[in-house]
Image 1 (tube, helix red, strand yellow):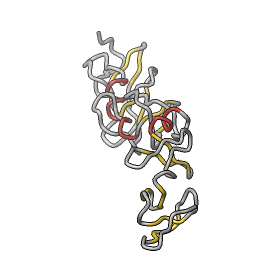
Image 2 (cartoon, one colour):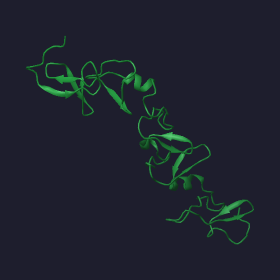
Image 3 (cartoon, rainbow, N blue to C red):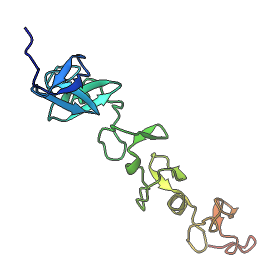
Image 4 (spheres, rainbow, N blue to C red):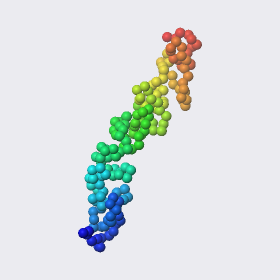
Length: 177
């Protein structure tokens, strides 16, 4: 026999069981929906979730443990930079996964989300400027890296006898040692 709710206020229907929720019953609101306390449970283990951390994915509700261990989360990838699990947006570059906030130049630590970047042979990520500084050939005369002119992406150099020169450092084929 169901209890009488004549003096109780009607709050609405429970999202899980569709039965009426009255003010004299234990109930909770989550994600803008109404649940009986006993109905607000994990989709995997049925643990009561009222007052506890929970995750909602594709209409299913998960306790914290089942979310991380039962495939409820949308990504099971670890960030290539920090090593922690990526739970929200995944940024992919050259087959590696990153948190967007972890995708940074290895030299200057500038965020590269949405920015041009370069990757070396060891898949380290650089801003274009630092990549040129590190990967640029050294001039055989002045020993300074041969870098692109400000605002350009290509550098001009002279190569002679397997040596690199700035245009202004090369003296027309005279043996410079």
